[in-house]
Image (cartoon, rainbow, N blue to C red; front, side, top):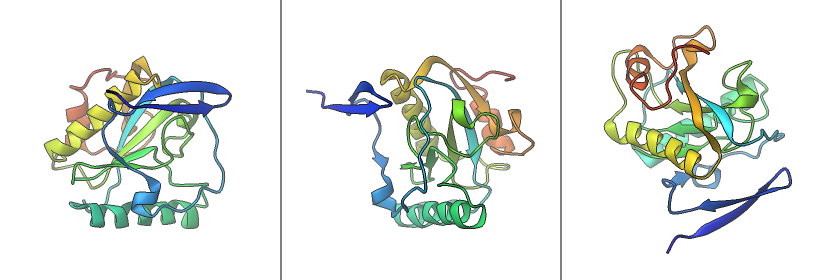
Length: 187
């Protein structure tokens, strides 16, 4: 029997199937700080932007939790952002780490923040691909977003390099996502 979670966003009630989504390590799980402010975006969100963190990878819940907390500290303390910039992060351990989460505005791609979900793979993927478990987790997250009405069924998938001046998500990962459902060649 599927568990149903009822969520309210901007006065709209959503029924989310908990069984359809992959396990997501919440902010409480990885020790996230409280957001300085939250801005919601309407759902379904029309775009997904894939990034990499350009750091060393992490391979366990403990090391990934530390990495995600450090990224949040950098974004909030050094860059003076309201929170971590990504909606979700994916570790080489195959876990999904909640950033700002679904239907909230991140700070990952200027001009697209209020109309996209930013998913960052933890590590540098210029010369290597993330492990299959991480790639599968990301694709499962996107399917879940569509099934739960949080992502548009025809959402457009981009690598960060397509919407801003960056090498992200790394050459190998960028080549990989071009084979994923909903990838488009240009904004």
